[in-house]
Image (cartoon, rainbow, N blue to C red; front, side, top):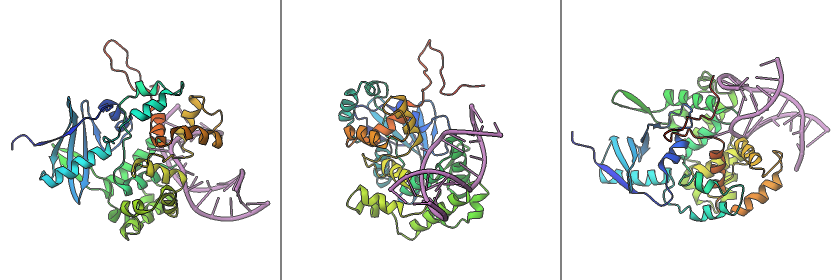
Length: 316
DNA sequence: CGCCAGGAGTGGA
DNA sequence: TCCACTCATGGC
């Protein structure tokens, strides 16, 4: 009926919505959210209820509109928390930028990527499942696999004739068989990893709360790596993206290694001690630095008036 | 055709 | 502890 009520989240210093949107739409076919010119649409699950929200950048606030789903005060409060966590809005980036400026090779990042926040994956099961899907394959293929999985096992919300998907619940995936997932071109081992992971969640053996209750990062990593299919890379990736451990480094990440080489921090991809020494200068900001390194690998199309459009990959 | 992608498990030395 | 091998398939 009337105009939908909005939720207003104050913009912190060093928050750049279009930089953040870069990560949400890197040019791949990501069914996790829909990025438009000035807004991002996402279907999500909050306290067991499904919502479709639209996020727009205002002058002083991030404006969040519930397009579908409950709009009561309780939901809105949860939603505000969700958005702030998703976009990491409660962090002061000044100390990070001060560290970046100390290194001639990285100082440019504090200007060029100013306001870029570490876009997270709020749901731990989704973060783990997605990172298993993405192991050792190119992102185009990874997003395609995710879409197939989401379209078959995930929920969906239809709005104005468009379908918005939700990542499958662990209950739904726990009920799948390896053969089912093989049909989607997941490898046999990944299919088994995913189903087992879903089962572990369904049995209540693993949850965000249980992990956070552990005393430190090392014990959380060990708990994650006991699960088949979760190695050093995946465990740290999820610490970084879902648990928001500021020191999670997805060791072995091919993009990270490429970026380290490009910035002449390493010459070869296996100089582990050199990498360790380098990151030791960024205690407490390791995961942000990784994220900014990933950012450095893609050249965002420059839409400034009068300038030609540049894309990351050559076309044709 | 060969090599690399946001790796991880397994088995042998 | 440290390789070499295997898995899946798209992109280049």
